[in-house]
Amino acid sequence: MAATGCPGAALSRAVLGFWQTGPVAAKEWATRFPSLLGCQRRCVTCVAGAAFSGPLLASASRRYGQNSALDRFLGLSQPDSSLTSRIPAVSMHRDEQDLLLVHHPDMPENSRVLRVVLLGAPNAGKSTLSNQLLGRKVFPVSKKVHTTRCQALGVITEKEAQVILLDTPGLISPVKQKRHHLELSLLEDPWKSMESADLVVVLVDVSDKWTRNQLSPEVLQCLTQFSQVPSILVMNKVDCLKQKSVLLELTAALTEGVVSGKKLKLRQAFRSQPGTHCPSPAAKGPNIQSVGGPQRIGWPYFQEIFMLSALSQEDVKTLKQYLLARAQPGPWEFHSEVLTSQTPEEICTNIIREKLLEHLPQEVPYSVQQKTIMWEEGPSGELVIVQKLLVPKESHVKILIGPKGHLISQIAEEAGRDLMDIFLCEVQLRLSVKLLN
Image (cartoon, rainbow, N blue to C red; front, side, top):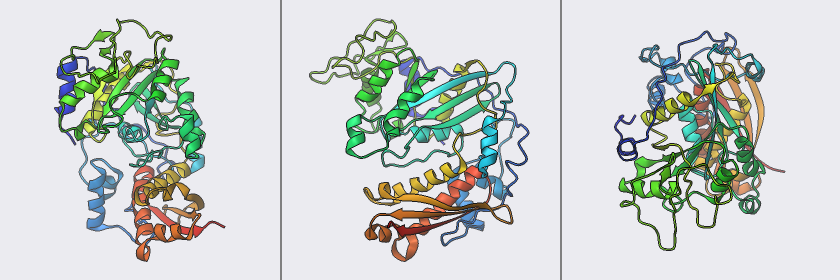
């Protein structure tokens, strides 16, 4: 976990001077639904050839960080619960999850709410940031593009505030959607999300030198069409930059030198590229007629800028406090025990798909079809999942299984660990590979 004074955060505070955080205290422990956590807490058995216990399980726990489900299984020391917010689990039973989603919110009289849409190019780190904000991994994460295939919803509830995160697919053009035969949801979902948004978080991967110097045309088009929705800029992966001065140049370019209606004093650090004109308009609301012109590469109407690494808990905590503080008076949409609107089966399929994307080469994982054969609670309260992976080519079968079945076993092991931390129960995951007829 990074220290509070990480280079990105310190630079943002010192140079920009408009870093705002809201004093949000930790959420108190609340009474849980007995049925939702009825599954027994034991060490995980991930069936695809391996079981975990003892030192191996402790090692796995360290990978998931402090206060993970594995830590609770092992009885490892936990921080004072009065200082940390409790993170809900997801029920392994679909009917229980469905009932919880329609359950009347247990909101206080002074309830506040904020609907947040995360926008960005594919692979900018939106799902990683969402998982860190939620405190539990419920969205798939991969280095390959288009891991998130449709809109997914996460819920943060602390004290009187509820923040609803809409993790959207990376914005793409209709040309790319047709060229790569991608689902229509990748094209439509981000736009649908904007219709109900209270705040837009635009995420930019500053480690990608090919795309970091300007907002994508699709992001700019979305911001323009919904210019009435307040927006903030999050510059992600700042820990990957060797020269922090690059952040100043990027800030000037991505904001056109204006944040919250004020011109930034960054002209000396910003070197305009030949043929690129970046005006700094006076402080006023967005002019729809002028926004999105042919020379526009940034958005001069961001209200705040955050420079962070989505993998740093301290950095993300600062952003989380800001979002909770921005919540406005209004009724909650979900019960405080809701973490995501996804069904247990959807979470499982997405997590397995994440592992396929991580371990399979090139286009192979995009052709795999997943079919859940079994989903049931075992005699000792464990969750038993059997999923069949269907592939179009015999060569893909061999690739997916791997030498002596090691690859398919590794995928099942990693996916099982993640699912155990989501459902807080023992998970037995079996995967098989079959050629499509």
